Image 1 (cartoon, rainbow, N blue to C red):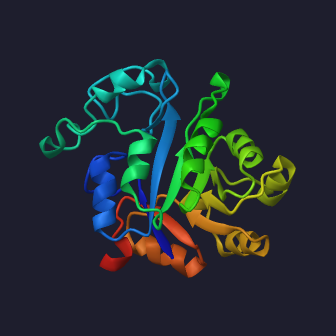
Image 2 (cartoon, one colour; image 1 turned 90 degrees about the vertical axis):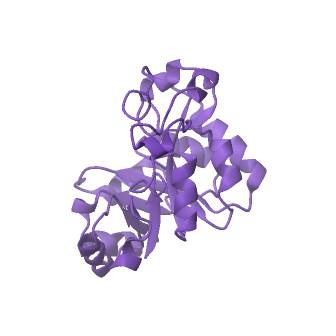
Length: 236
């Protein structure tokens, strides 16, 4: 079972920052998960929330803030004084740090009403590094459909936060051909895993932060988990 470092080694360093990704690599992570959205001037930046307020010393919406201004925000002080002055990274910076052999799960964040070209911009960036192992995931399934049209062979991960009555029928109707499905852990079951496997989908669930929970989902048959602790299975 693959452990993806959720927003980097976010239990040990501020989430979605270069120190968190570097720490995940030091801990031997096979996969790293991160969040990407566009700045006001179309730069793909790595940050989870749609606003700056929670994880930086700045405020306001990401999509209304230019890249130059984002670079001056402190994304580390909230975590500890050790990370004072840590900037918000761009996706390009992270790609320069993480080796192509480590699978990057890039979750695209997007406010539907904005109709941003996030899929196109991320795809253009990744085309420069075709050998990289990557999964594109999103809760915004329209984004995944767009990405599939742009790059039919890129692995896609469908994120879900609810227990749909007939999830396979939904996926078929959507036209998305997923590599994997990423349910919230409480919706995982052997039946879910067996159904997904029967359709050729891998199952990776979030967010698993205890050895006990990791053991349960491994027993059920999950292919991977997203954890703030990249060393979770090594500690259990």
